Length: 182
Image (spheres, rainbow, N blue to C red):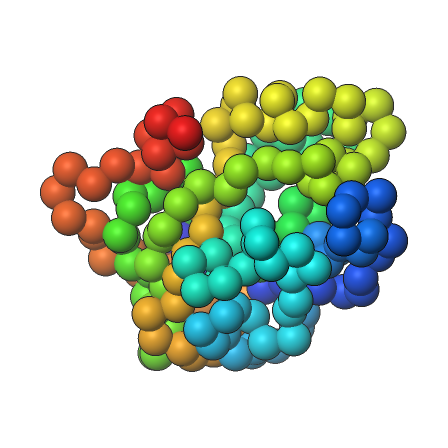
């Protein structure tokens, strides 16, 4: 059964050598129930709104299985929020989610899968050290991208909430398939 392992939002804005001079990728788990509205997790921000956030990228989800893969590959803990995700999911491969599929979480919250994450240099800088060199290419080649979601119906979410999948239309491409086409 799929569930929400952690809900994350920005902990602090950090200086960054990218064009904005600041990044909001430092996401960390919050405790208790938190609201998610049309633009994402309440209290979260995106420093670069040209490439992050907005209605179609309101929430970013990453799976625990993929985090475990990277933990082994990189020989370090991949804690919830490290990759900038808002939701850490367990029991479901978010990369095999189909575009248009909906996730019902709790009584009210409904999210819809929209697109894969496109790894960027801000993400590489977040990973730091020797990992940063070639990180974007390595992350992309593994196709363990995570998925962006839009908010269909606002609601609240907490760690431990069940994730019920409402299938997309027959033949809808997966997050992985869409990434291969780009």
